[in-house]
Image (cartoon, rainbow, N blue to C red; front, side, top):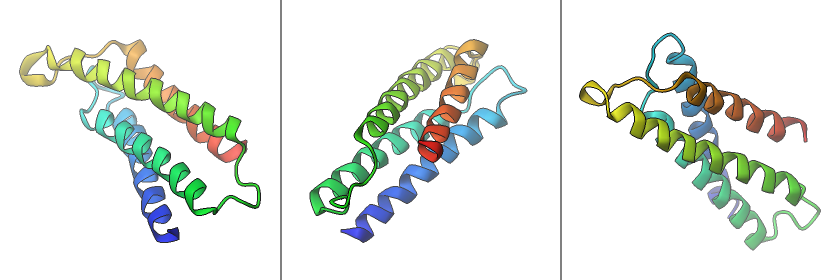
Length: 123
């Protein structure tokens, strides 16, 4: 089970790297990379899977992370996923699927991604 947990952790980290990297790479352009949505979903599924595997296998019987932290990270990840979906839909209305995205929407996705990383590290 520990191997599966580690695979899901890698999926989770790669997902957030795609979200943050896609946001940073698109700062100078009006659009947002489509991969941001897929990265957010990968991170969300990986995180949920990590918690499920750890709880089912007893990896966290010695305490583990605070469930309030897990709840906050889940809520933020859900909001990021929904916003990335909205941005993907908004961008697909442009020329050949590369239309502009509202700057507030794009920066909210980037900001919440950083918030989720900070919560993971410092809580």
